[in-house]
Image (cartoon, rainbow, N blue to C red; front, side, top):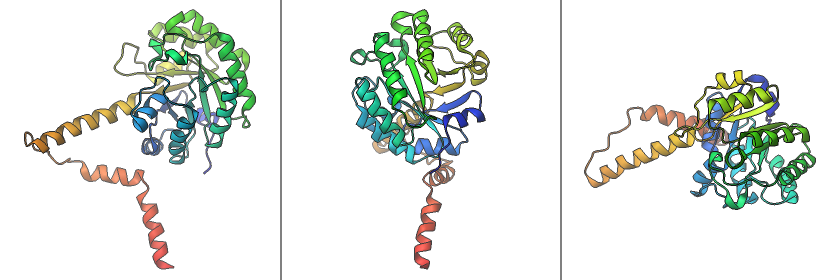
Length: 293
């Protein structure tokens, strides 16, 4: 499989919009929907794969296993969470080798304190010392063998320390030579405007969350502010969870005899979409070719 780089994807779309894939099916459908890249976040992946919260319960081996399944289902480039590197600088170097081997085009190393890790960056309780995260980012840059692998420094300092401290960390990350930064947990539109203006011209990531108390800005608005990549960490998994919740409630009512289950009017179209996503035609062609031998 030939996979383009994150740099290639950025050249195709500005800002680059990256939905989060939580499993192989979602990654395949993101590609078929016409997106140029996607992201893999620990929260959605752990929820889909293990029904775990993203509070530091897993390690590198778990993450690599989940990412590999997703990577194999799509040919477009993707960015993956690397949490805190799952240990010290040696662990970060091991992570880079493992991630590059399965096709990760870029990854984010964060400074949130693993022992007090929160799922939402705006709820972050603590971050590690600057020296710790900077050592990990240097280790990541030294360990990569592909110059196109993006090393992105993520800081969750906004929550516990404030925006000024978070921006200082981002500035230090760029001075180290990282390819991009992500200041997580911004709470107001003014925050986004300030960060965008400060780092405009650099690879700068933004994340839009639905259903919370943070701003809901369009990719065009964020691009004008200076952001080059916009992810939607919860939008897809939220819709999947809502569909399963509602569908199971209807099916439970049908089983109880309290509410008949109505067949989906779009059932055939949905079946066609699923067949395309699992590449049924290609596997049928393999069967046909075998019969003709």
